[in-house]
Length: 194
Image (cartoon, rainbow, N blue to C red; front, side, top):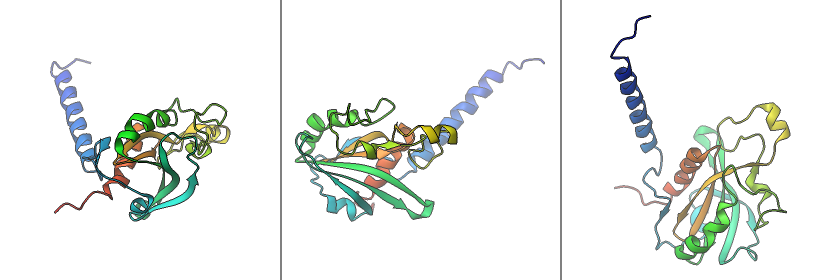
């Protein structure tokens, strides 16, 4: 088969168009403009989040979570897609405390290297809720059923956002889905565009 001298350029063009189309789809997602750390002057409470559809399942004890005022585990139902997304919320006095103190305590609970056993976790509350079975962490398909039947120590949260005085850990099968799920719920707190 004879190679066309334009083949590399065609492949690059197709790859570029694919990336551009993916980027534009990403920009169309709810809250696409919400930064990882935003709204430093907002002082949120659980009531602000439940007002946008968050359902609280558990209230965590925060005695051993430095500077935290409260923490919760719950979910947001997306009826149109027939899914629920889990979130862990941690509230602090202000965003500065969330950033300087809270982030260290969040990072051990997210991603592939999350610490998900009570014996090893720095903060024991909610460790069980931060785990998922078989990699189905988020509304996408994860691992096979064989793996799912034997693996229930996988991270449910792959990223977090700091919005005002709140740190929110968001369910997802990977970082991208977790970020999208954070932005989805936080977009409901944003003032409507006029």
